[in-house]
Length: 214
Ligand code: SF4
Ligand code: SF4
Image 1 (cartoon, helix red, strand yellow):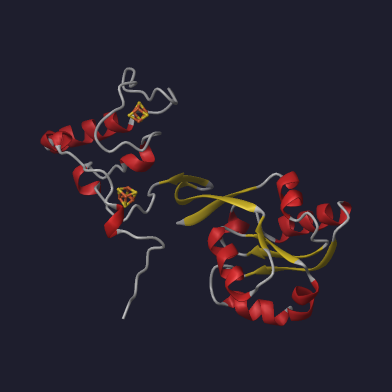
Image 2 (image 1 turned 135 degrees about the vertical axis):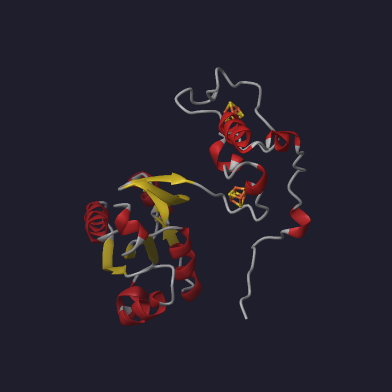
């Protein structure tokens, strides 16, 4: 299970850091290294591009796991370079960005877009399996998540655009509800296709969500 990311276009990184001429760069040694978006090589390339663009890079570090408390340790170890910077560019997923943001008051800018938490199907091939909706209905959809398997994230059956079992948005893909139907049929549980899933109750799930483990 990994947090999958994609690099933002460099122009966007440049725009975010407009007027902030000294930068410190942070990469992540776990998911972003695996995704080749924020490891040693990518941090080095970002450093070179920022310098070419006229920025002064006060330092760069790849934190073993940017989303945990090691971040505080590494920021302390690089205190002078971090203090000298006017902003921090983080090449980690949004969790890493928010972790860094916990410790600093200066601008913390994401250089990556966080796409999804992915499961590895075969080496190097990840797919989105769960949107962490907090109201799981897998027990009624034959273990197939309609929120992630359907392009429109529908919960109550197909949109009407299904064509010969394929999705109208991407004809290369099976319609999520074809998959759910077939699997429920195999299980002899087709009655579940008629089960109505009410709209998400946002009142029972205020954001940000919290879990306290005692
Ligand atoms: S319904 Fe889908 S998105 Fe929601 S928790 Fe279950 S698997 Fe995750
Ligand atoms: S065709 Fe199926 S998978 Fe595609 S958007 Fe419609 S319901 Fe969702």
